[in-house]
Image (cartoon, rainbow over all chains, first blue to last red; front, side):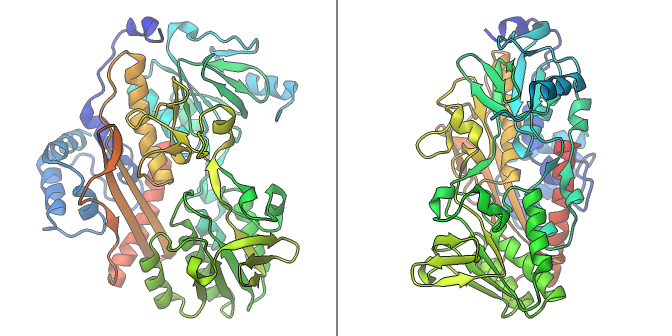
Length: 89
Length: 427
């Protein structure tokens, strides 16, 4: 019943899954990937740069303090979605 | 129960704008102006994030946030205030950014969330109707778990586990303590808010003592067999604060049975320990709003659907943060905020009659051992078989034996995290 009046509202963009996935990154890297402190900003980096970095962290080819532990929780598909989202910010 | 007089409430009403969904009659229209209404209860890491992200996902949804305090003091980084590194202002945030996004902020206490009537009843009188409600009530204390302890004794023996006046009280007591004094801390049984918090507090008090009163001692009496980041904390204490900290866990008579607040004495099975400053962190349960609203089960925490955080006891009401039983996720500000985003997305989709997404969650807890020495624990979570599960191979602790550069970087990132997350939530 709650959605009855609501569904007719105009311009309901579907919530993009990449955006939802990226939200959790904001807690460290800032809203939309724009950091306000010493955490690296990831907004506006190229899709390829972000993809390569996350994959290198995941395989331990690149050493970080915490990103190796975090990158291991994401699939290729998820990394691609994250790279697409942040490159567009 | 009534926190504000009727007059006070009316004044509060006048201070807010366009409270379309608020009704003093107690029968609130569910859709003022024909749009879906979400009421968020609690303006901390969970609630404030949920309010913001519902607006981000869909600005057309009406969002009302109910929070008694005009300014929110964060538990994360409150140990830096206790240790004299930061001031309370550094960890205090307001709600102007949320108001700027169109969130109606009502400063009142909630008497109860009525899932059946779909309304939130305010302590000051009146109620607010909702289509869906998100409750992020935080924790309350089980004072009865240790004899001699109650809400009143916190004036002598602060818990400082809800940040604000208690944080400042503990800081004041530590400042007044003479050099050569003893600080006694007693962490709670599991589960509790911020598992690495006691270790960080010990570290930052030791950091303060080292600078200001180096002959002082710290004694921890812990009822558990082990504590969060134990190996990393002990490695750091041996390096930074040698000989200052004595940590006794369960098998070293760490279980406190009784407290005498007047003499600041803690009684264990086989002995007693008096301190110049004593900090007992009581055992915990879901915040009071959860209990009075029928959201908590026999565990005194709130069972929820792991995909949407909708209560399994009260349909239409979602519970996030410390109060919720979120599978293997710890009770942390980071976890509450990431849960809030998942919940906000689910709520917006459910209001549209659409399917909620599949949750992907992260938790990171940084702890400062000193200004230049940080450690962390992280975990990534997915959703499988109706449950939140840890993603195998992900997460874990900072390495033991890491060099000073690594520890320094994590201290910088701890501060960077605090700046990012507090800006993300409170603007």
